[in-house]
Length: 330
Image 1 (tube, one colour):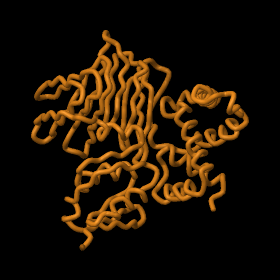
Image 2: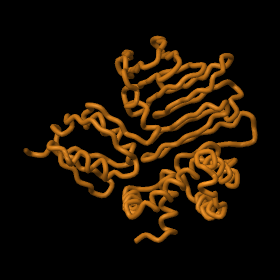
Image 3: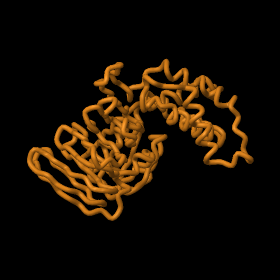
Image 4: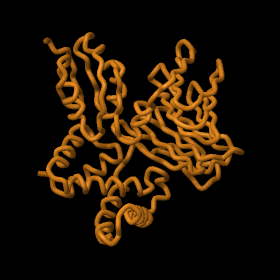
């Protein structure tokens, strides 16, 4: 059985994106032991997200983070029914203090006191991150992604993205918001959209939830409307537009849900590897073309393995940090 100190360290490693597959399994086993453990996990995750580490690690303020979390609970719960115990916050403040001593790979940046300092936020495989930009725009970063921007937007509302992010852009009609990738540039005034532009994938896709966006490349310019998905092929330089009845499969990752609809395992492979920080190996070519529809959480790779393994078409096994998938003979 895990002792509390070990669990605290494991949870911090999980939240910071440093946990490996074995550590994630230990956390999953611990969560299954009791509802109290699940409640503790949820509370610590809220403290972590409220801490400000992911928005500006240099200016991290533990006391403010605790007060912010307490105020949020006060809003969500009836204070008469549940009195907030500040000692409880101080107890777990020590956990956050410990977090400052551990490396976390989703934050890497060079910041100084100059007006032109550049901030880079990186999100590790197996995790996601959420940040508030200088203009109060909200950005969610998916696994294996990196966002770079001027710390005070002195030269305009401009950011650069490698990977995938969901943007909730603050409205400002006088100052357009620009997102630049290696292949396309997006310009908006105030809107909600998802942008996926991983360097190792041949497609760049944008899904618009609300508002409008203008997408520009070296070859053409396009204007999107809500519920559209636009895909740019890096090789052919062609743009395709798809009308969507539901954008959840493109955006629900920011809420911790891995949604897939009628996708082959070959198509799911890079997403699953980033989502769970694992390597997936196909034993035969036939298994790559098996199609699946479903929703997975992030906490345990065992959930994903069990989901695919229950089908009549594939068999899965775990070997260290690798997931081995092969066709199942019927």
